[in-house]
Image (cartoon, rainbow, N blue to C red; front, top):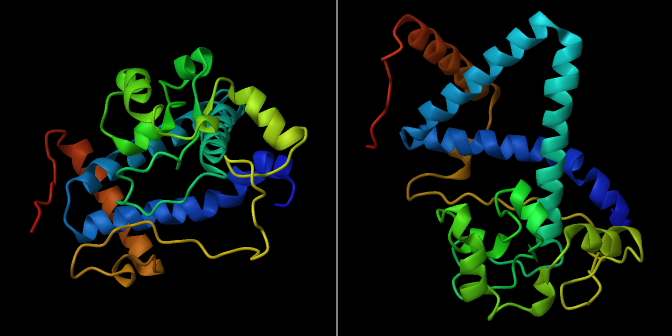
Length: 237
């Protein structure tokens, strides 16, 4: 959107469908590669489905008030925070972030990081995704801050959000250049990395494959219900 305030409010619902599609394609890729991760993911999705149906059956109004509304707000909040952390930053190809420090904006306020397990320290998160979140502040101080553009460390996300999206509400890069919107809407980039012998067509979401994923999930839930110690892990080829 040309209005940065509309980007703030509507970014998450605008991209939600595309994000869900990408997540399902990623699950399909794990299935094609025979990775045990898919079993864990399907198990968690089925548990979520069962809990959701149970809560709806018990009391639909309380389900909406105490479960669905907080869930939707949480999704909007974390995705919108991600927008604020990347909009106007350098675009770096996946797997080529070594030595790059200006691809993420960092919010260092203590309250935000207390509530989000230090998710405000976003550059170090991309540099080392497996690092425990409790180590982010120190790692940011030592590895990121000396090398990044100073404008990419913001003490307050709320203050930055006001300046960027409300007043003056000008969408610009971290070094204060206007964002070029002359090309209009661009197609989504495929962020997944495919091993040799696997292509995007192999993980395309056809109706048959989606139905197969649903049936596999139902089969997994049934098997676990009949025998909780059963686990159909598929080893890597």
